[in-house]
Image (cartoon, rainbow, N blue to C red; front, side, top):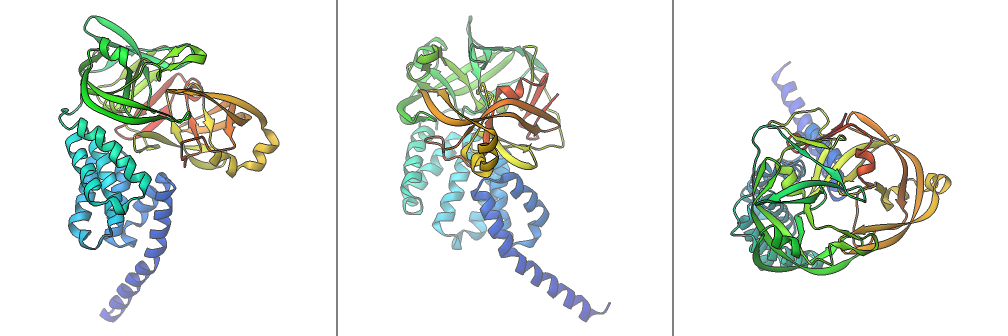
Length: 426
């Protein structure tokens, strides 16, 4: 092949890449906006050389964040700001800074998170809509309040086995020890921050911080004031946790009167994820290995502080929230709209009660039977599952449902791995 042919092929190759780039970028942005993270990751790995390096780096920053590579995501953002910041619009810079703040918070770098929040407030108000700006101002109360708190630590002395039980509504509880006293705490992967009632904060010796902020209770929409506190040390079986941040909530908010249930202590995602891998056995034991394993699935992602899993329902691969603090699974209005005709044909109209911090609400749903879903290497059948025909109040859901204990309970063991980012069952 002569030089002319080589140059011609090179020019054609570059032209083809340039032609496909806008189409890919549009598709990637749509997937990012719709939180189709698993699709975006696969396409980015396959076509990362087919788009402008700046755009590839931009999408990589989000994917690294979503798949728990927060340090790498911070580096991606820095490279974007340093290499391309001069021509990035403020709206893009603000979005990247929100992502950066999330990375810092997840890695317990609260002072750095506060610095980013403060910069957003001082210089990027016009780059955000009013709701986003209000949310940043509220988040800044939290990050500035935590700015002097050291990094959270999990000291795991080899393989640890701890017991778990179910409370009267089927939620998992694990033992928490402070001094000579033992308490039961709900094990909840969907809790963005570990939470505790004001009364139990005193019992656990929580060091209160001088900060107060607004919080809302998901399905009820109830708004209330929260405080922050820190457990300088806390023992969960043989695991010593240091510098654990707790959201301290009014007792009445964590009490569900209709079922006489107090959610006194909730151990949430920031603690659970730092254990790297948790193996939950249906015999009432939970194993935290000293070294996490690996699998081919990589079906777990993080939307902010919410765990999301990629699962196969019917012939479709869909994203679901994953909640060990939910006694049963439900499907969101996105699922209803996608499969409306089939649900109207096979489903039965019903009303359910949704409970959590802040109380209980009733929702009209369709109940469908024998819902089959595959997660990792296993398939489960949920005998009955509720499908919401309308959006759940106060939750702008992009996912297709929330998977809970009725899925987990069908298998003898669940593996929850935050190192290689996968969920599997045995």
